Image: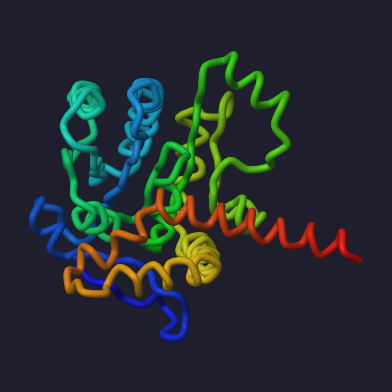
Length: 261
């Protein structure tokens, strides 16, 4: 795997893998549609989201017979077993990557035309890799009720929250249906203008995160030449936590400055 700059040489870096090798390894020709599906890391998430994703993928395949799905999973366990059992029934061809390494995940993402994610740190990961995506989420009806009543967040995806803009389409709660997901995914696959619009905003996100990731990259490469080690600090969960802490710190400074006036 390699780190390559984004489209602009002066812009923030995107993490990219070896798309050509991934497609060759899995028998996928260059012109076929490959979609990364990231269903979540918790058992209940996977059990709730994958049936919806299956229906969405079947609809996409009706108009795109060459569609293939790639699903990286965590180390073998209950979640991976649930994913394997659920996708075994899919009509759409699926490339499963059980226990995928960080490099394998980015190879798959880079080879993909777009991604469909259960909302979480995976959404951030797709934008670090400069891959357009759709975020989706369903919860227990009672949980959804309290979220709607108690939260004031306009968005649920971290990139949308950080940029205060709906750069990533979100299919949430009652609107998380196969039809809604397909209506969001299809333009990202077929319309280059729509793709570029999201990817340009992804550059803004990487720019926002670059002070954090740059500092972490420097500390991580001290005494290590491993490429895997160099990208480990940019794992989405680590970046997300660091970025949230930075935002809270900035907010505290603003409040303190305001109170001293």
